[in-house]
Structure formats: C-alpha cells, structure tokens
Image (cartoon, rainbow, N blue to C red; front, side, top):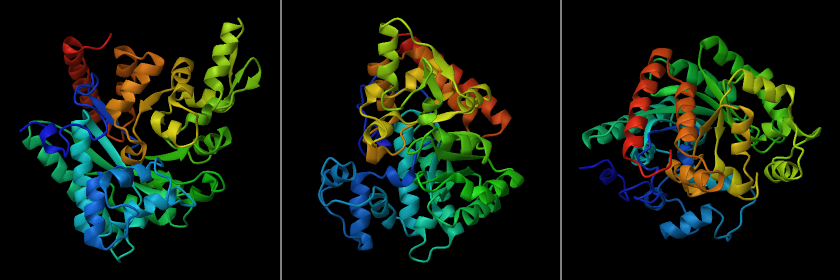
Length: 398
C-alpha cells in the first residue's frame, strides 16, 4: 500500500497525481483543520450529526463553500466555517477530521505540518476543551501511524487558536500553556479571526501569558487589515510568525509613495518599464526583514478571498525580492480548492519560481516550525537530502 492509497482520492484532493511538485518535500504551517475537510466527510458527518447543509452532494457543497455557488447567501464568511465546525462536536468526529488531514497532507508531500483550529468552536455539545484537544491529538497520531504503515513519514502537530472576535483568547492561551509539553502534538498557539475592528492590543493578556509560559505563537495579521496591524503584531504582541502578513507590502514605498497590496505588482512593473522604480522599506517592513520574522504566505487564499484580485497580483515574488522570509501554505484546502502542490504549481506558473526558490521557502518553513532547535536541525538535514533526491529525478527546472 502506497501513501497515496490511504487518501480518499489517491492523491491530494486538490492536486493532480502527475503534478511535478507533488513529491517535493514540504512544510505546512498555516493550515486550518476546519477549512480542510473532505467534502464527502462533511456530508457524512452532517447526516450522522443531524446538521442541515445547503447541499447534499459533496461537490455542490464544496462549490458553495468556495463561493462558486452563491445561494444560499450568507452575511459573513465565518458562517461557512460554522457549518464545518458544527460537525466536529464529538471526539470521534474531531479525531476523524484530524486523521484525514494528516493523510491528505502526506499525499501532498508534507513531511512536517501544523494544523490550527479554535477549541472554543468545538464545545457546543458540552465537550470539555481539553478533551477536544486530546481528540485532535488522537486523530493526528492515527494519521501518522497510517502513513508510517504505508511506508511514508509525516510529523503532525496542532496549534490552538484564540479568536480576535472572542473574549476567550486568554482562556485558550491558558489551555495551550497547560497542555504544551504534556501533549506532544500541541506545538503552539495562534490568534485568528477578523482583524478589522478587533485589534490585537485587546489580546495582549493572552500573548503575555504565552511569553511567560514559553509557548510559541503566531498571529493572523496583514490580511484584512493593513501595515498598522502588522506593526501591532510585531511590536505589541511580539509574535514569532505572521499569519499571512502579505499587507506588510503596504509599508513599502515606490518612488516615495506607499504601495497598495492590490496594485503593488502592477505598479512596480510599470515603474520599472518606465525606467525608475525606487523601493523603500518602512520601519515595520525593515523590522520584519531584519529579524527574519516568517510570513505564512497563502497565495490562493489571498487571491480568492478578496485581499487581492487574482494570483498574478499577489506580491509573493516582490516580497521575496525585498528579502522577507517566506513560507508557503494552503490556508484552507477545502475553501480555497488548493493543496501545497497546487500552490507550488501556481507560483511557478505566475512568477517563474523553480527549485532554488522553493528550496529556500521550504528550508525557511523548517526554521519557522515550532520545534526545538535540535529537531529543526534534524528536519533541515532530512529536507536537504530529500530535496537533492527530488532534484536528481525531477522534471522541473533547476
């Protein structure tokens, strides 16, 4: 039995089996558990849990979640995540989703992955917070065992999310601190949810607790809000990674004028064609570059979720050129109809990345993991060996 045989489709759900980057070793750091359910699993669990879905056909359901089918309309994107979390209210269901996430990640070439989820969204039926965390751990462990039995290898970890729009971020931080080091799959913490109107300064009690407890954390920032949100994240909350972070480009000037995330790529290209393109870094951008604070870049998600208009306008390559530390991630595999393999293919197609650029991003991902120093060094050595083997037998350009 091969690794791909243990996934539902025989390859990553949203990638083709013959894509050249499929076997490239990958790290995934920004990968939401409740945004990555298999559509069939969502429909099956809804039926067994008594949850009403807009569509019973898995592909129709997936298309509605992605916005390709627009009816019934919802007032906010989070209502769609409310449906996926509604079927993840029991230990068995949570464990199943976690296990399947591992199988899909392994089929996607992921060697190390951190999946994030918000425990407070999984206790509607009375499940204790810690029990929900233990259910994710059980599912991740089962997935790892299944991959190993198929001759593969993956290390799966979880990040516990507090929400910007909730008053429970401190409680979830306290939960993370209590299980960190005890439950091996708990790698750290994240603050997720809408930025605009929910500044990170309202959650500094949570980040202070994590700092004192020695728990690493990342924060969603620079996606739905601009460079000021990034400033708060790095200078007030002291996050060690930036979830998305793409709008840090708005702290960069072109010929003295601030860039806009939607038009940055075209503006720089036009200025260069006209012969003068002087790029300047603001203090926050310079700070992030100098301290190598990693950006958890999610190209398809940003492009389909309204942050940008099309992948071709994503500033990922401009950020690379400016010296930012970039990691590549799928964000929500179901909602964005993507996998890391597909992210690689899209970035190659639109920006011409090849083996050198993807190798740099992969090793940056290894360094950005919430592993210990010795574990990172061992993983980096493994990646270097695997990438060399990939390069020797691949069809991609070096």
